[in-house]
Image (tube, rainbow, N blue to C red):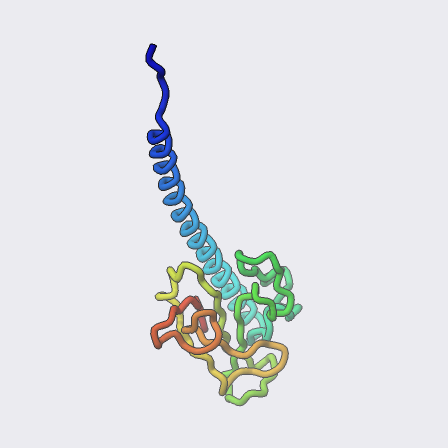
Length: 181
């Protein structure tokens, strides 16, 4: 009588093939998740940008800090500021790592001391994972000569790896998606 069944080598080959296929699927799934989070970051930045423009139309200035300005947090503009999808920490004052970088800029006369009614420009960004959309962004360098002082954060480098530090022009990765007005 002949025994029917699989040999140990046949089982090992099948397990190896399944392992290889599973690893390919996992890599593709990881990349898809990164791209989905990046798409959300871009959508968040665009939504904040739209709310900022609505705020400016009504008030003729931009808020110094989008995270702490109670006028900006009204139902008319943006009740809650979105935060990075890779984090579970809600942004409250702009200092958390999950916050999108924002800087109010004053180009109505220069100087580093400006009232909220003089903040006529802004710089807004988000740190990308898959580096997929940074080719269409502003890549504005940090403007330290014309940044309002006070409750808002200082300007950031839009061509840097994490929207801070030095520019990535020297060969580093530009993972900062930034917009200006």
